[in-house]
Length: 283
Image 1 (cartoon, rainbow, N blue to C red):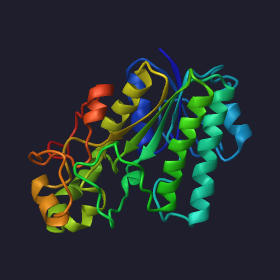
Image 2 (cartoon, rainbow, N blue to C red; image 1 turned 30 degrees about the vertical axis):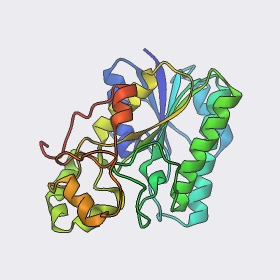
Image 3 (cartoon, rainbow, N blue to C red; image 1 turned 90 degrees about the vertical axis):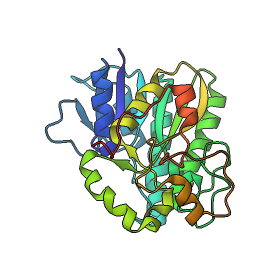
Image 4 (cartoon, helix red, strand yellow; image 1 turned 30 degrees about the horizontal axis):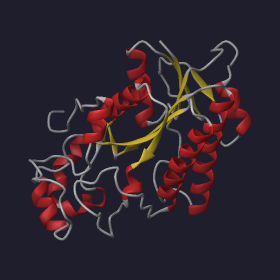
């Protein structure tokens, strides 16, 4: 059993992560600017843009906890275009630096954080180098939001170089969904081009939480990154047909089967033991 701090615990993915970790016996605390009404999990209000606040949240808070074993960093402006480019950069880059540095100051060596599918080159105005996409090609940020995610991965690599006992795992989450979101999915077939931007991928928040738990449990040091998507797409159109129609000149690394995800989760399956349990098709 570990004491695990989850930044952004009031968000869509954060809520699922808190539940998943608690259900597996861990003690959790949600760190966020706003509380989640009705949540059974301890909450501490924190401004991660303030380094002192970040350090204070990870070194103990009277009546709540005295130490933290691991950190899950999910807090961020969650997508491009919500604020100006400069505001997005300053908010997300500063928060991530503060959390990573505060974790080191608190002696925490187990850090899992939300990177993003956007580092793959979304919205794929320039087609990907091959399909299914995976972690093997260099990041191709096409927005300020994605640039920050790419820089976070670079920063994590250097922090791990400085501290050989440090483990930092970046999970490149696809578009996070909850069961309530699935009512819109059948309509995606009417305009498949509308989901071309992320290769028709998604991640059920509960499966995303499973990936976080497995990444925390992984007994390694250093940096690693994983694509985290569901096993299927948001479409009932076969993935090979979508690839033929919208990316006819993009090579395929292998044969595509059924409605499998065009964001490969093979590495997460192999290394983390990750296996999606939920699908919009059975929701």
